[in-house]
Length: 163
Image 1 (cartoon, helix red, strand yellow):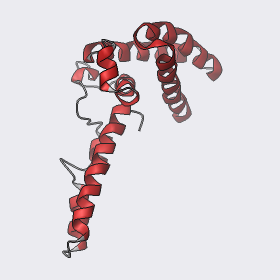
Image 2 (spheres, rainbow, N blue to C red):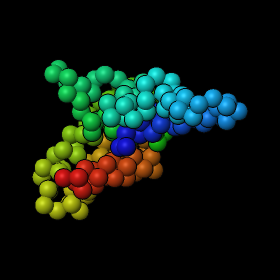
Image 3 (cartoon, rainbow, N blue to C red):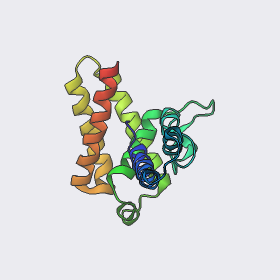
Image 4 (cartoon, rainbow, N blue to C red):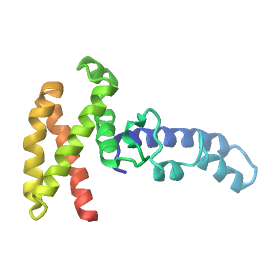
C-alpha cells in the first residue's frame, strides 16, 4: 500500500477484526460464519476497499473530470495524514485544501523529475529532494519536511521498480 491514509484505514480494520475475533472465540457456531464476520468488518471487505482505493476521509478531488484517479497525488495526501497527527497539521494551518494542493504539487515535482532524469534514478531523487525541501519547509519545518520527502522517495522508488 502506498497511501498513508490507507494505512490508517487498515489499522482501523485490523482493530475491528481483532475485537470481532475476540467475541467469536467464545462463539461455538460454524467456522465459516466466523470468517465472513471478520472479513466484512464494517462496510465491505478490506481487500475490495484496498483495490478500489476507498479510504474514509479522502477528498474526491483526486479524480479528474473523466473519473480517472490520480493515485500518486492521493498517496502523497495520505502521507500527511499518516506521518503527522491531526493536531500538528491544524497547528501548522494545513487544512484539507492545503494538503490537497501540496499533494498535487508534490505529484508534479515527482512527475517532472522522473521525466527529466529517467535514465539516472539517483538524479531523480536529488531533483525531488531539491524541489520539495523549499516547498515543504515553510509549512512543516526541516525535520518533518525531510521525513515526508523520504516517504515520497520510497513511493517513487517503488513506482520506478514496478516500471
